[in-house]
Amino acid sequence: MVDERYEKVFNLNDNKFNYPFADLYAEKNGKRYIISVKARNKYQKNNLLNSFYKLGNNMYEKAKAAENEYRAEAYWMALQFDTLTYLVYMVL
Image (cartoon, rainbow, N blue to C red):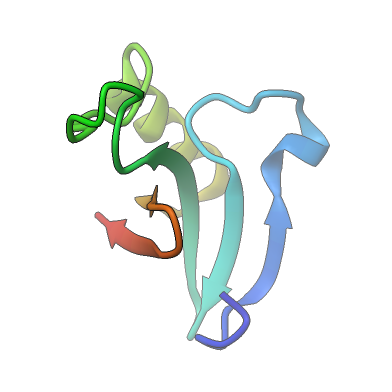
């Protein structure tokens, strides 16, 4: 996130253990963001494609509550790990 020139980046879990929905707070060009980071292996143990990220229950309600608390826009950041590579997606 530093490479994209985000400012005031901090881990929300430092303020409240297991903060509902979001993991990170950041600002860029005067806009506020709260970001939920989800990671998974690309393949399951049986070598089939792992098609799910665990977003948790009531994710949209929790995202809205976090948006209201921080007056920020909610995003999801998804990391997919393979044997030697990884991909990162950021989704609104």
